[in-house]
Amino acid sequence: MNIAIFSDLHGRLLLAFQLCTRWQRETGENIDLILQAGDLGAFSDVERLDKATRRYAEHDPTELGFLEHFRRYDPTVDMLLAGTTCPMIFVRGNHEDHVWLDELEQQSGETIVPIDAYRRVYNLKTGLPWIFQKGNEQITILGIGRIAAPSGEEDLQQGKYIQDYEVERLSQLEQQPLDILLTHDARPDFVLLERGVKSKGSTGMKEIEDLLERNRPSYHFFGHYGGPPQVRTDINGLTLSVKLADLHWERGTSVLERGSMGLLRWQNRELHSFTVLNDPWLKEYNIHTWRYL
Image 1 (tube, rainbow, N blue to C red):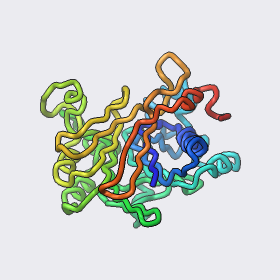
Image 2: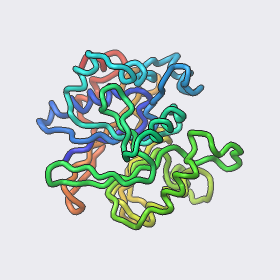
Image 3: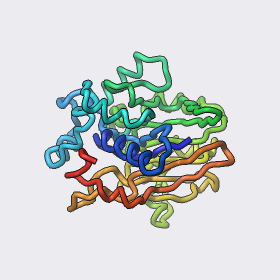
Image 4: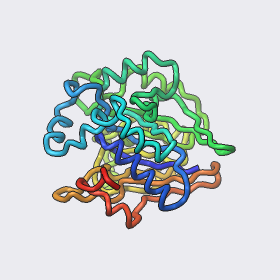
């Protein structure tokens, strides 16, 4: 199976689907699944935008892509989405409408919850393994949404922070085989570790660290920290740790950020590979052209 990987979309869901359609056209293969590592930009109404999203949207309306293209049915968008048949599975970031997403989760007994008008975009609940199967190929994915509260934060129950019931759910998770850990935040001190500095307690989520050490998945995909892609073996010695670039435009330009799309080829736990895409056709997509390609 072929799985497309994206980090922070911040509303640019339609662009992600269009890139998958283009990859299919270029390769003659199909994308079977899309995984997205939080900050999808899922808001139920413009009045529910957080301050950061509202501020960025004043300069770049693509930040509001979920509201524009996915909240309500649009036959033109439906036609564009028909270029692929795969679902997009995401975990929550810190820039989402958490009150709305909480309501949708509570209303559903399923592990993944559709949130869009086309039933193509699904929220993966934290701490519940989800199995995706394509033919005789199968992969098990666990999500951990939101971020950890920073040291000294007084309001720990803000929606953007991991909730107590989610922490409890993770603590009860058995030591079962997991293939992919999909999160928004990273293990503690990811930013410092990438710079070769060892410290304790500065950034990241302890629950992610615990799961990486206990369950040792083949891959960990996450986002949140911005900057260029980071691909390296986790300190558990087994997991390939991948942070992609945000799917947005390079600072000061209209060009798509390099390293914002990955491709996982998966047959089974022995046969799989991952690459950050750098195909020449990706350079065709910029803030002016992406709607028409």
